[in-house]
Image (tube, rainbow, N blue to C red; front, side, top):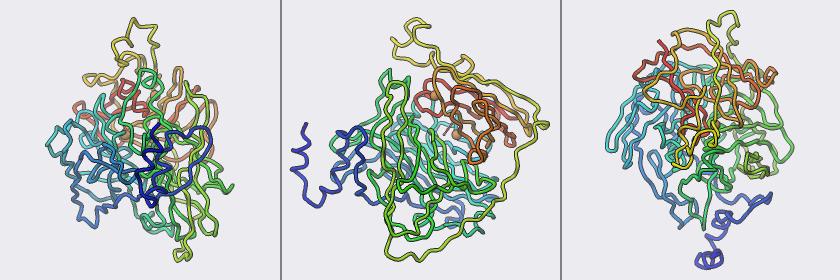
Length: 485
Ligand code: C2O
Ligand code: CU
Ligand code: CU
């Protein structure tokens, strides 16, 4: 181990920054101290930019630890991308210029836009090409994101750094007294797990075993920052949390014993804010949370990195430490309720579909794994994704119930083009804090029943996807396609 040699070569000033970056050696429940200022992705406000934006998709050399560049990718930068603010009722045109040496797509995860601008696997952007999309935003305030979505390369492209937030604001969200100053008291937290060797991020690589469970690593990064702290200057701090990991499931909680106040889920506000002791988040899920930062003591948002098949231990990690600034000039308020439309009545439902997330174990298929291909193992209703097959058509305007079950292990199930509500999960109605508008749900061992209204079109040339958001499973074929016409 050359840790000592490496440290020997650094100045004292960079030492405090560098040490937690070397946490590849840390295991168990020792939590590294917060030493790096939380990076805040730049904000691109579509209204301020007259509704026309340029985004470069580029390779980068990102220094998670100063002086230790990692090979990464990003949007308009070396790792992750700008937070793009969009407004309900407005149309924004974005030019995505692909400067990578491979094809990609840019999917607007959580946006209610037609299939032809959804950025699914059909919307390839070849190297050197620019794709121009006009996003007509017609949806409630919500915390969404963008990321690549090509068949077979999504996991490595996202892992290299290609992800960013889309924050949708609407009339109501602009009129509340909620914390609303981006990066000050309305703070994005993109949570990912990576492996660092001597401060350098290990490039994406999945073994056969990791393809089965999804790639889970041991160092948390938040907005691309290792071991971050954030200085609070407001009585309340709003957190727009995205689990942007390939496969990790987290349970978030505060180490001072206080509760988190949950305002909303992926697709918008809950009917009422709910105080919760912890929040579980699977890949692709977002939560809009408030922490009380009016006190004078530092505290941390923590994550239990939940066990999986193949790794039965729960590790603890710090997500971010909140440090109070000496003065707190910003005051905000939490409303007692939000205008959140009710779920559709069951009588409005015209169709119920059953989807089983299926894994054929390698032994059941001769030698599938020996060819290094997982494609015949992962599927939905026994069939792996086929870009030339539309799995079904939904009638435009229809309200449907999808009943999702999973075989062998849990999977975060995601649908494009809609927000849904969970009606029933593992034999129970969800608690109030899970009754919000969502587009990813962790399907465990029982049946998960969701209801959605399909209000945007997707043709057979640009269908919507539904899939497991464990990126290794998605790439291996646990995905299907549907049209809305
Ligand atoms: Cu976050 Cu189909 O994607
Ligand atoms: Cu999506
Ligand atoms: Cu899965």
